[in-house]
Length: 142
Image: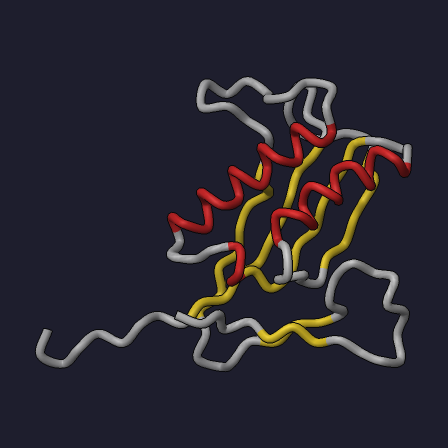
């Protein structure tokens, strides 16, 4: 099924940003609000300790699994917020590049934050997202 998300670009804004500046969804879409995807292993330990890229990849994996549980995919995401525990721009960019590459051509509006600390031991990255899906109609005789 085609994504309900429509990405919006503007010719009057800088094209240096690696994402669309806005997105819309139709009125009949169902929103999916996701908790921050964290780089946690199934046993609760933090993955890729000390590695911004590795933690970003684990967060994308976690996000993808949460989306699947809600009947959605990365292509249904409307926007993201990527939080990186660092004051170094290089660390933020390293995490962002992983997220950007995971989304590919579906370059949703995103915000990248440098924060002082995140909630789990050794956590460096977290990804928040909102998605929108259209539920397939149930057949009348089915």
